[in-house]
Image 1 (cartoon, rainbow, N blue to C red):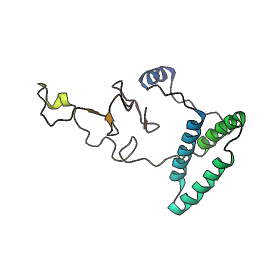
Image 2 (image 1 turned 90 degrees about the vertical axis):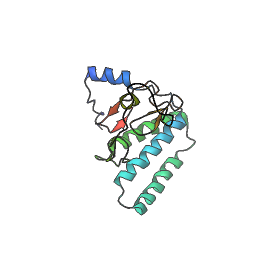
Image 3 (image 1 turned 180 degrees about the vertical axis):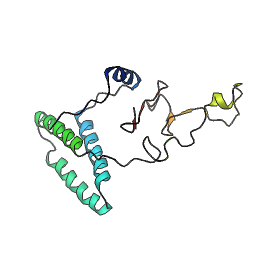
Length: 161
């Protein structure tokens, strides 16, 4: 299998690394869970009918369950092989939630910043007191999204980082 392509040049890669929020260190169970979830999302992009999706999801779950409880070395090898297989089966145009980056309704009629609406700073009493992320979620330090004030939107991969 050929290595995954690197499409960004070094300068843009450095800028993207500065804008990205730092990812937490994941346990092996969390990595397997994410692999399973991402596998289901890729399967959803390829499945035509919900019945076909359910059958293939059952087979996928059986593949994950047959390796449960193996030794850590084998688990690490299976995790890497699973990530490579997931990359090999990626859909060229995956399903996207309409309001997320790459969706048909992404940033359609985004709300204006409060400073533009009220340049004098006199906000009405019923005005929202929170910032909104591009995916319409509230930007708070508690949820970790846009806690720094910046969100990198990669339109090539159609995601927010």
